[in-house]
Image (cartoon, rainbow, N blue to C red; front, side):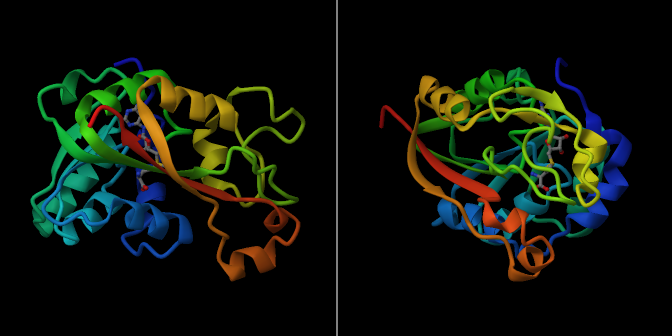
Length: 238
Ligand SMILES: C[S@@+](CC[C@H](N)C(=O)[O-])C[C@H]1O[C@@H](n2cnc3c(N)ncnc32)[C@H](O)[C@@H]1O
């Protein structure tokens, strides 16, 4: 594997904070972008402990979830043993594609808040494009690459750096509890969009859902900016 399984160390922290209650505006939009999903074959890349995979399965999809973290995949499998939804979980580095090669084609690929954790974007998009059937859909949610953060919450790039400086970094915002531990890869919006296009993934829809009011009320400085980005792509060649 070439990717780094940073979530192995914080699997309990992540699973207890990001639960199966999927009510944030970005995740709701991501799920909407994949509808109608019943009966469709869906791959979730960077699925973590499987909370989005489970929601997709509850909506009737046939789901495969893949993640590089053995600890999170074990949690996902344990949930599947407890309440079977027919989901297959794989421990896999989605930037190499090896483990996923013979599983496709899929009607859709989902990536929920995974892009900035994936070190090799090109590798992940090559895997995604290979897994999708022509005309298949890719839906991604991410902290908006243009979100500069605020007083107590980190943005998408270091507070003492520039939006244009790409690379992996670790957040220091008091409320950025996850990114203080696992860091994130910052890429500009144009880097993302051009990379998708290079892999034949054509932008269909793009949304910047507003954060919940309670979130915004506690962080009025940060809430002036776009916080989330949700994008839907179609694989060309249908
Ligand atoms: C913020 S979590 C999102 C998990 C899940 N999609 C969710 O919404 O709860 C990001 C995930 O990306 C995974 N990840 C990072 N690099 C990866 C790679 N190269 N291949 C597969 N998964 C990767 C991490 O292990 C982690 O589970």
